[in-house]
Length: 294
Ligand SMILES: [Zn+2]
Image (cartoon, rainbow, N blue to C red; front, side, top):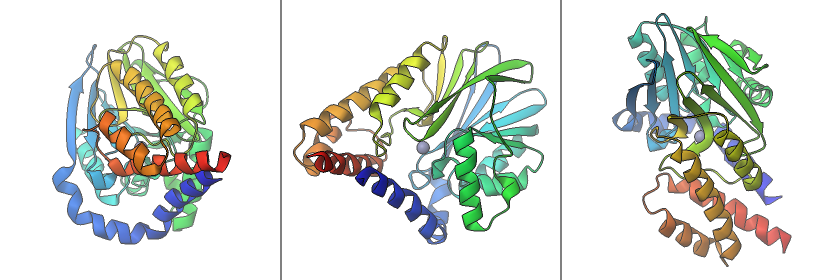
């Protein structure tokens, strides 16, 4: 029960306070957001826009081809959405796709702005993601045409001469997470199944499923570059790091007597990880679940 309640507070809190929050955030976003560019094996170019902590340090990855570009994830705030839109414009390519990996607000609230700026881009997500994003936009009274236009189905598509395959995982970090893989480039986009140096959201209570999904990802094919949902890109060690984090979290919550105890232990295991508020929320949810079971 508590996991559900906590998650509801997490999501509804965003919905109810969203306008206030945006006003508060606008002044802080620009100075801390960053952008990294990398060129992979056969020349695929990926630009990663990383939001400030106020934007949950969420990543948007822009894949740039000869004439087209596609975007993975759409940020939280309008300000970050606008920065990503400017980044797309600066590349001078036609944006043809926006893919939302999963239905957490920090990956799609910026969609309304991006959808309005790039009206010709197809907006895609898995079936649950599509449904959740549409619900949110209805709540805003926003334009439904900025919600995903179609659920991803099948297993792959072509983009600028390369095959991009994808797998839709259910009930792990969130209710659904789409992972994209470019075999010819050995490039993997994990959504929030992995992060780099940023605490991961375990407040929905499905660590076992999530660990299973990471195992499956490990066998998807060689991945010389991994682009996570939060934090810098890295190599396939990011998958092992995610696995370790989840196992440590589960062990810590099981061993700890109180919320404070669990928090202290996790912080000593991960002293330099960013976004401690994510860790606090995860522990609060997990500890109350353990209490419920007693
Ligand atoms: Zn996220």
